[in-house]
Amino acid sequence: MKPVLLVISAVAVAASVGCVNLKRSRDLGNPNIPVNVTVAQVCSNCHGMDGNSKSPNFPRLAGQKKDYLVTQMLNFQNHARMDQAARDYMWGVVGYSDRKLDRLWGVTDKTWWGKALGVNNSGLTKDQIDGLAEYFSAQEVKKSSQLPDFQELFMSQAKRTQRLAAGKEIFEKGIPGKAVPPCSVCHAPDGHGLAAFPRTASQHSAYIEKQLAVFKENVGRPHTPMEQVARDLSTAEMRDVALYLESLP
Picture 1 (tube, rainbow, N blue to C red):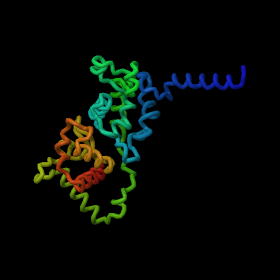
Picture 2: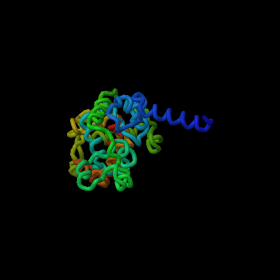
Picture 3: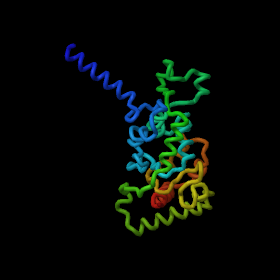
Picture 4: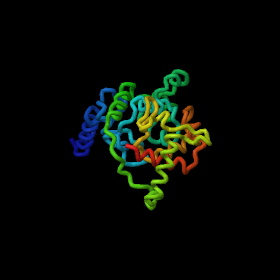
């Protein structure tokens, strides 16, 4: 056999072996892939192996409420979360599973129009989603190692203390003059979340601030109580409560 053919054959064999290696596979449509492998090969790239992400672009999932994680992955999968970050980072990971649309319009990855739309029907199964949620909810929450953003970098200790106090006031008592309820009502007094309401304690302040802005502007996150809560928050108030939440253990 010619050298070129030998190389091609070797590459083909290696590729085929990689596709069936359950300990290294990134095949999200294969329910036989163990949860910890999917975490290591896919999720950890953004969220970290233990769910304590380093970048504020990606939320910290460690210790997050399992019910909330399941709900959000299903929202990504059904395209109910339409904000730009959801489209960019999560739609392609979890796949697409709106079976009603599949039946009515034939929006599947087997049709040319489905392919043109980038539809992926071979995404995560309900059991896989449940397993990933269980995995991350069980991880230990670690103190954020994120460096302060530019504005916080040159903030005096007195100013930081003042902002933390303002954020705590909003979290615990809301803003009565604006009819903004206390955050603790849904997210628990310690910020650890309640059932379908997420843990916000120890979350990246920049991520919380970004999500509050998404809720406030109602861009791609419809039909959520947060739309009403964030509507009247100022930028400064969002920054204060986000900074306070990041400081909670």
